[in-house]
Image (cartoon, rainbow, N blue to C red):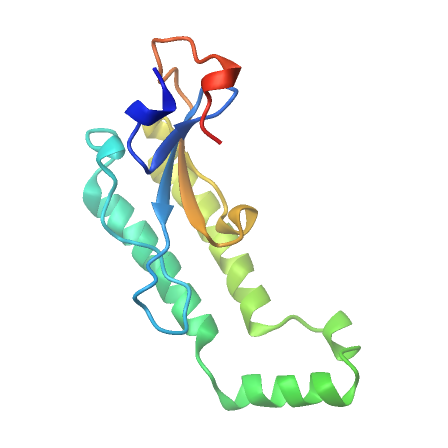
Length: 151
């Protein structure tokens, strides 16, 4: 199968796993959000409601982390006044949110996705550009040649 035959949201990696990207939603102003519509590649593998709830929870955590509050303003002022040395001792609101997302993704993988043969990768590993669902099972009957793998 050539890369052109795959939908734009999926690709095959060198280890033979189908990787389905859940793209960013750039319609949300000033905040990182993922699209909650399930990709067609996941149809029949996991319930649309489960995926929608997972992505919705990740979006809610990111939305909360992006909110401006007195605490974030104070934290930024203290960081500036201490030449950012205070950041070595404390965690920012975004760092705490990313830790919450990592824990949440790990829990969701154990309860919903791994039993279905899927795995959600931590969004930090993709720079918050994509949320991946990696099919861990033998997903392709054809042999994927290294020269034809979409990158």
